[in-house]
Amino acid sequence: MRRVAIIGVGQTKFGEHWSEGFRDMVTEAGAKAIEDANIHGEEIQAGYVGTMASGRLVGQEHIGALLADYMGLNPIPITRVEGACASGALAFRQGFMAVASGMHDVVVVGGVEKMTDLDVSEVSDILGGAGDQEWELFLGATFPGLYAMMARRHMYEYGTTPEMLASVAVKNHKNGAKNKYAQYQNEITLEQVLKSKMIADPLKVFDCSPITDGAAAVVLAPLDVANKYSEQPIEIIASAQASDNIALHSRASLSELRATKVAAKQAFEQAKLTTKDIDLAEVHDCFTIAEIMAIEDLGFYKKGEGGKASLDGKTALDAEIAVNTSGGLKACGHPVGATGIKQICELTWQLRGKADGRQRKDAEIGLAHNVGGSGATAVVHILKQGW
Amino acid sequence: MRESIPLTWRRIPERYRLLGTQCITCNTNFFPKRNICPKCRRKGKIQEKQYAGKGKVYSFTEIYAAPAGFEDQVPYVLAIIELDEGPKLTAQIVDAHIKDVAIGSRVEKVFRVIQRDDPEGLIHYGFKFKLAK
Ligand SMILES: [Zn+2]
Image 1 (spheres, chains in turn yellow, green):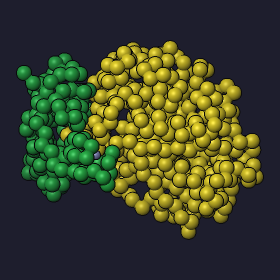
Image 2 (image 1 turned 135 degrees about the horizontal axis):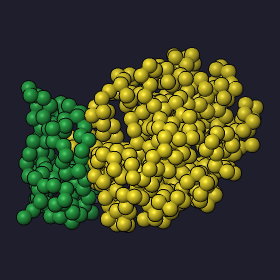
Image 3 (image 1 turned 180 degrees about the horizontal axis):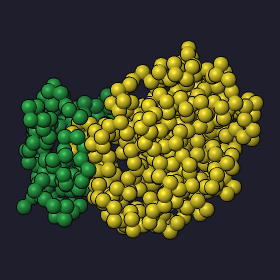
């Protein structure tokens, strides 16, 4: 396998983009990444794009061909990848494997979702397809509902409290307030979260990531030629993916994501690192409970101690480990297919030392964790400075 | 999602009667049915298994923001229920306030309307659960 580096990144602002469509956003992100990589279009040999539900959200399938056309990249092959909310990380992993294998040299990878064209109950129904349509969604489950049942078990088994959950949202808004790409750039208080409207007991509206439009893109190349393009290439030193039961009720435990544990173990083995080597992590906080479980399942905290660690501020920008410096899914927003790529963009800026206003001091190694559905897919990547 | 008539029809034995499967090689029960035992795979012998519809609450929530098709039911209690025969499933708990439900509460199956498409459309039936006396 060849060593692979990120040579360029770019993203749109995340938010409600009334005037921009699916193809406008993804071409904007792609053009920014290609500009950042300082390459010519002719050098790009292939592309991958992650999007979860373009067919139902905007009626468009055949996304690879659409992007090849609108990015001006015909006739190179572009392939769409889908793994619910982990679609972005899956696309990134396909790009990584294409370059690592020697199949292609320069590859562009994008992630995109256009979600605000429909009303909320329709979007909720569509996102439900990331779970088990026949045995969860049909019977009245929603994604907040599934994560609420995880939260209930986590509270029951480990004494996790609503305040601990809320502290995740407060911290992520604090980070998001310093990110010009974030959907919400305002700070919130613990009390605001606790007093917000109930969505699926015990999760309130401020425990949930929002509905978001956005796109992000990266350019990959073999590490040995990466410095030809970039003064600060970022090496991908681990890429791992794992699967679990599609329905939450089929799993032995609701208070952990087994797929995250498996992917994390493999990723740390590939990178020959331990959790102590990680300076910052972008984790999948689709709900506040998800971040608490993620920092446990990734190995940063023991099972059951993630809530207290969050409440005690150990995951803040300047603390033990900086978690979700971008603002996470909660504050930066969660255009599902784009999220996994946005995480890579954020880590790249951090490792380059160019995360204006929210720079993690001495950031050298970062981890990205992207989850599909209620945990049926988990993807972990580890990145480090490659210069 | 608006389910088609064939999709609804082919799930009737499972949704109306809690008919699942079991692997007699490793003695594992499945609901909803599985055609392949994840443990035994090709060595597994699968046959039908009728569930009694009694169990206990493993986790639960109360849904306030409903997906399409459930808007007129909110708020409703949704739970993961562990059947006495082993498998867990997701279902609504009817005629109960969230305050009445706890992890470990005994529940039993009832037959109910799950959702209606529209006044002229399909009425989907299936299982819900209620607290056992
Ligand atoms: Zn078996």
